[in-house]
Amino acid sequence: MKRTSLSIIGACLMVFSASSSAALFDFVAAAVPEVGGDPLIIDSDTAGISISASGSYDGIAADAVAYLDTGGGLGVCHSGITPGAHSPCDVPSDDNVTVGEVLTLELIGASAIMDLVFAAANHGPVNSSGAIDYRIDMADWVTDQTFGSLSMLTLWGTIFDFRVGNEDDANEFYLTSLTAVPVPAAALLFGSGLLG
Image 1 (tube, rainbow, N blue to C red):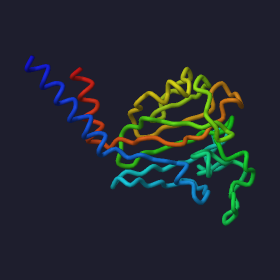
Image 2 (image 1 turned 180 degrees about the vertical axis):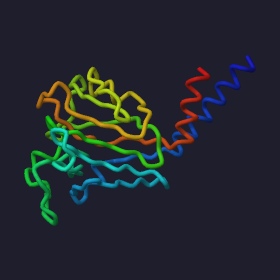
Image 3 (image 1 turned 60 degrees about the vertical axis):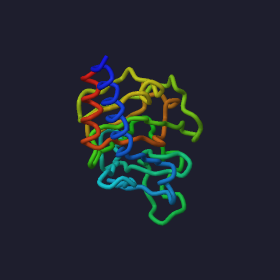
Image 4 (image 1 turned 45 degrees about the vertical axis):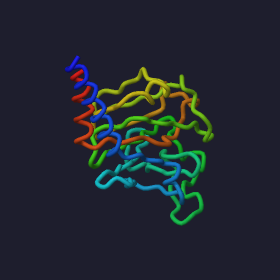
């Protein structure tokens, strides 16, 4: 009984600690004004936690940039950027993650992401059963995920790549938000999982 009580108290403290120091990234709110860059550095309100976002097209990083779209969120633009334009991505329909593009996120000051939220190419809700591929820290691609299942996972690592699943235009997407967990809090979350 005493051990169970201590485990519950410890788990509650770890979850509180992790959630109080985690950083929420709202890419829709960050997209005012719309901007593209390679890399695109996105800071959080939590000190020391940032994301460096970049894009690639057909495996070539120089051919695309990460792009923040008003109403959509974070995507990739490979059609070109016109600085100072109202909508700097030269082809407005190319500002989400399309077939052939890869969105790369590198965490600065964090070691896990969770609570991923996606939007469809039309800025509406994404089909939760639509396919999305991802990889962590340049490992092999995980190709059997759906938007719904990926949004429930905590992904451990520092570099995350996302691409359209099944090379199907219907699965084009924006990343609208996520939570990044800093290194000490991530270790606590991992430790709580080990304790059961």
